[in-house]
Length: 332
Ligand code: TYM
Image (cartoon, rainbow, N blue to C red; front, side, top):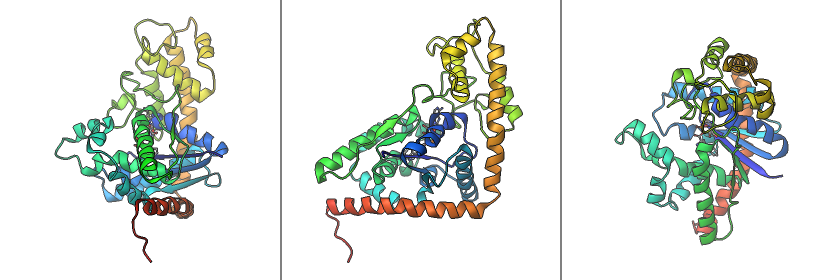
């Protein structure tokens, strides 16, 4: 069995449609066929200021949403990053292998620090991708299911794994990104030139899975398309319609070409009305299930304790090997 690992930040409260279609949906599928490790990355979240109470609540909320989306702790290892101290420990090692210039080239850091203001961006935000490298290498992951925006971080992971292996002997599996073409990048419903995201999206262009389904339906119905009326998949010339077709295709399991045929001669309104309905059918039970998991925090915490224990067994072994290869004196 190949191993997969991935993570999601707990920062924003509700997951958005891009998180789900770009990543979480694949996590659910891969737990059936792979040895799967999934985590809520609270240590990554604190690279920007967090309110302690909210962070704690949002971490549980993220876990509840992952369960509601279909993760099954019997089929995967689900845990919270800070419960496994080896992440921070291997993170330090990886910091000592990363070039300053190399870290400076990470585009997500550039975007985020620009948004924060250069003086307010922390060193933690700067080394964020390096902690992500440690997350992945600790588990010897073969594949990392993520959205397109994480590709550069996986590239960095590959570079550092190869560098370490070259210098100190074969230690880490060099992982491959697992990014789906159709859903690797979901776009803002109001501005299909930008990806859907909490920080950059317009409120009307962002679909939060935990929003009132009525609000969601309205957002879908008022999505931006273009001036002609032909429903055709063409991301270059018709990014808005193509985004809706990708979303609809994935949520209904219908091929895009079949959707094109179905809506031939009909206007955008028909597609949007149908998609709004599909979305409502998806988010309504998702919200209910999330709430059910939240209502029972003891069970949630117990399940996380088990997950962390499973994760630690693997992580501790990799870390011990890494320390040894680098020549750190073992504690007696
Ligand atoms: P995060 O929390 O920003 O996002 C979680 C996942 O959602 C994907 N995603 C999207 N996919 C398609 N279209 C979109 N518009 C869209 N927006 C977000 C992201 O690509 C991601 O897969 N750095 C990571 C978390 C992380 C991680 C890891 C991932 C930490 N350690 C180790 C994999 C392996 C992040 O910030 O994801």
